[in-house]
Length: 384
Ligand SMILES: *Cc1c(COP(=O)(O)O)cnc(C)c1O
Image (cartoon, rainbow, N blue to C red; front, side, top):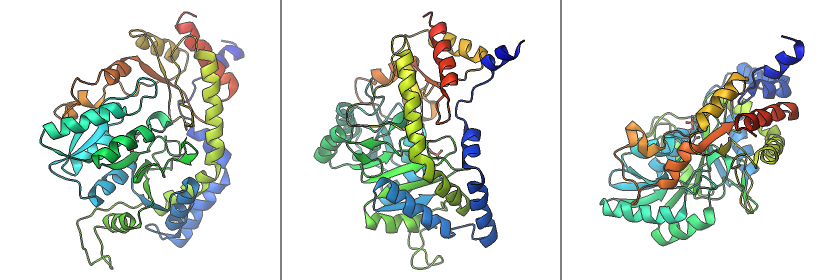
């Protein structure tokens, strides 16, 4: 094999954390070293500093950090007192954690359908899901829109339903933090927003982590109590049942450094998305970003004609190009979630998408030649 051929088939990273690490250089090492020096591993000074920076970044009044994106969702549901007999509407086309947290607090997830173009919660389906919940004898209390693949949900359309039905809106922004909707950043579009710092998310740390963003000072007080076992004025004066869910100081230190380059990385991801769209729009259905929104491209997900996905994935894999299918089994088809109510008439869009979608390598450090390799390989595999 000559040198050129080897480069042509070198494996491409789906998400290249090592490239980001090289760019950040010593700043991360130094930030971690500072924590190793002061040894305040739980709730050290970096935690509050990061919370302030995160709230300032998105324009929310408050940020409360915690141990994961899943915990961020759970803590809000706990703080709202959502439990047995309550329904929380979730899109069925998402990662399981969106609905898992509802079950964890003893409430019932009711699955709604998504929009075929944006992959996000369909507000008309949300409205019908509220009725479905009532028919099941449940009290609809909240909705968890997901900013899937980095694109904000349709908050205006959702708000109209929410206002009429008196629902609490908890934004699952694990994939969408950093995106904007009519000039406002995610973190300010719902009563509470939960995000994740899992390493492969757009803003990731070097382990698990999460945060809640809100303008509600009363909610903040309860969340801060819940994340330390329901503490009152003192850690050993417990006033409610809580859990242990703090963001490690070391992770906060890492995130402070990563947040500094986050806007720049989002711009780079957007460039990658634009090049993909230009190179692929005539051979596949490329993702749309509706007027007034921006995406942080947690995933770059295209749609293919039914039946060609597996062959495309195999051909790309043979050339060192990884792909992933998010999500080949929507929530209502997963063993653990099969028994929960589904909006009446079923959820045909979710079912269709789960058979057509495939995600391509996407990160801020994907250079143009590598992207061209991906584009050429996809076109080739589809016979174009
Ligand atoms: C990743 C993810 C979560 C969970 O975040 P963790 O930090 O892994 O607990 C929740 N919802 C969605 C949509 C996600 O993608």
